[in-house]
Amino acid sequence: MSSVSYIDTTLRDLATYPWGSEISADDLATAAGALSRVGAAALEAVDPRMARASMELRTESPWDRLRAVVRHAGSTPVGVVVHGRMLWTDHPVAQDVILRFAQAVAECGARRLRLLDPLNSADGLRGPAEAASQHGLAVIPSIVAGPAPDSGDARWREEAAALGALPGATAICVSDGGGHLSPTHLGEFVQMVREASGLPVEVLIQAPGGLAPSLSKAGVEAGATAVYAAAGPVAMTSARPSAETVRAALVGSGNELSVDRANLYDAARIIAPMLASDRVTQAAAAVYGPVVPLPPDLEAGIISKLGRLGMSRKLLEVADEARAIAAEVGAATLAYPLGDAIVAQAAQHVIDETRYQDLETDLAHLVAGRFGALRGPVDPVVTAAAAKADVDDAPAEVTLASLQPDGGASEEDLVLMAQFPEDAERLMARRRSLRTERDEEGAPAISRVMLAELVQAVEASTESEISVEVSGARVTVRRAAPAVTGTGDVADGGGAGADDGLHRVNSPMVGTFYRAPSPEADPFVKEGQRVEAGQVLCLIEAMKLFNEITSDVAGVVRAINIENGTGVEFGEALFLIETA
Image 1 (cartoon, rainbow, N blue to C red):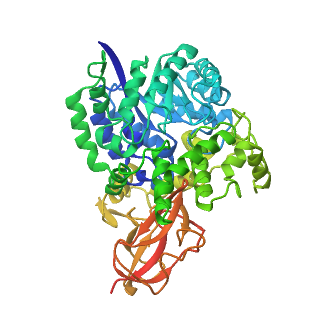
Image 2 (cartoon, rainbow, N blue to C red):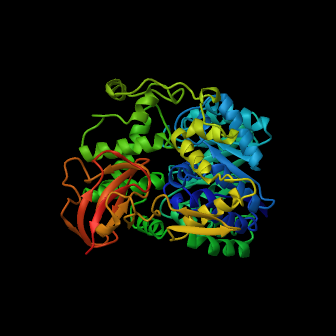
Image 3 (cartoon, rainbow, N blue to C red):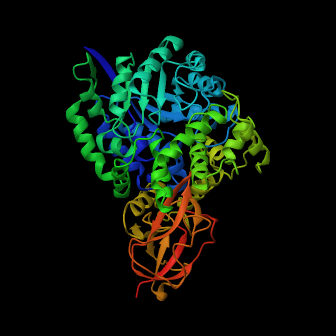
């Protein structure tokens, strides 16, 4: 009986964008403690989507989250995922930032760094691989499958060989994030990657319609030594195989997943209540739709958009169009951020019933070479559309020397500033607000640790403020913005006074505000209109996903505070509703 390792993705799937707004560092620590006993070979803790959720939606450092996981993971190695030279963001950074990033990962206690590039470029991963190797981290390059070129194309073998030769590479991960390969083709692909790279192969699958366990089994039977999986309820919401379904799928195959079943069940019971009910509902609804080769996190947004336009049956057309576009823009994969742009472009083609009238900005950047060398030729129609696109000049790579932080910024802060400049400034401002000084010598002071605990207590509760008094010193921590429920009462000093008795609907995320389902459609609501609880008020677009914002009260819309098509911040008031 051959033993197959299990690499757990629960933590990063649990706190991914935008759902991570509801997951605290304490939640992750609790989950990591439970997962430390399931026998996983590693816990992947932070990836770009999770880091973005932490910074944008919670103003919380991903480094603090990583440390919380490491502290509770026991002897289980903890891993981090980056997108090549973009690390956790959507623009490349200089090598000095990458070196400092790898140092921070190692100092937090993580032991693995998995790398992926949307063009499977070894050159794009070389800098992070060298930095990780220099700081003693295991390097796992990923080869992202599909949708172009065909799985039998010789370019895949060349890419696998180049990725396997990266500095410090200890294994190579075959990543199929949209179910592009059938079980037969995946098995052949795994064999090819193993032969070309000379490294052990790990298999990471996200696939619709319950295909993930069978695809994982096919990978193991072809020689993969490790499978990525999640705890049961999180696996369902992220379209991954659960560790239990992989274990069951391997029964009788001569292979056995290395997992402690009893502790796995306990972990699933602990983690399940952390999932947002809306996320579970969304995942359950997807089961009734067609099986399409799209990344599940992108598919959900497209389903919602097509449904609002009465075009739900067009999902298969969008998937086919996405495959065609991927080939036409130089054989790109659907890995972030190109996948978001390709699927959005495909949806627009199907909705408009015409092609390439406009081109997504990231695709114009791709054609211009900003993401690195293309894997194939670009269709002339795409080239012409890119030439017409209004694209800014390529920004200079961010270096540590180019940053100008306020005093007190740590090296970890600098790395975050290079990736999330505005969010990092807000994070550091929040920290500064926690610093207290003694008004006079000998006066009692409340420690920073206590203040941080108070902030976490407010964020984790429904209370608007908490006050404590220690030795005569009193401090009050108030919620800066309403909780991430999308609604709340008007706060003192808000757009309308508290005496007006208006109910405030707030933005649960950073994004772009849209009053209507399409430019030609009527707005969802107008001022003076009566709305019912559960009625859609607007859309907020975030990372190419259109999120419906609904009212949790019945009443009359008295104010719409945001202009159509403009950006909104987390917690910003969108609507004021009179409930009387």
